[in-house]
Length: 288
Image 1 (cartoon, rainbow, N blue to C red):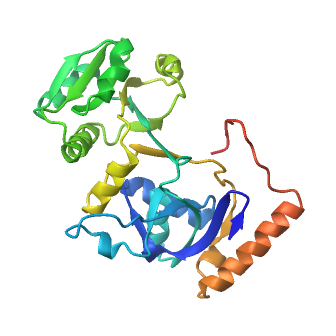
Image 2: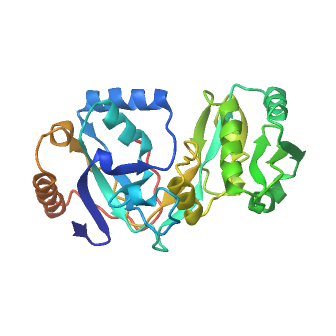
Image 3: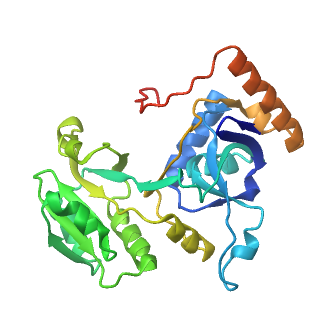
């Protein structure tokens, strides 16, 4: 079901594969919000799982499946609520327009010395590094992450080998240190990082996450490995937002063909009544 450059459709939740873990507390809160609102706010972003891996991986089990790029909490919340189906926006994973970047973590409550003490217990290398060298540090495959503190000092956390599996595992261990005291943060440019401490009272550090490759994600998922929540950030053109779908439609025991026919009529109505808008420029949303 295509409209311009995006494709929307209902699929079974059981046909979705996650590439990252989820925060159970966040999922529970979202499930309660969905029940209260009576609808799913935005489609889940997913892509057909490319099957081009070695015989000993899990690719044979991925045939016909969809890889969730954005929406792990929505998928998990709907599964928790025992829904069968979900609305997705399907993209071509290998298309050059599908970009993979990373989120950053704004850390609260935990002090600098507490954070560094806990890092030492992970048996990882931690060395001082000025902010201007952050980009070069993150490009090193041994770098796990870069921490910028409120006093503007920087710390590079590294492992002893360049293996991506260990990099993801060690990143999970670092995030576990501040698991209950952080929020996703994406300032848009390096120049805005320092202002985060002024704008967010109680923030003590920003964990800057390396950017992984799209093929690395596929390779790890094919071997049954998940990224920690809040690390990968997929960016696509024509991202569909604000298309609310009633829980009564999601929960209806009807064939997918009927639900997709309903969706086609809904999209046609929204477009004809000028209730759909496309923005080419970057925008800020203050009601998310």
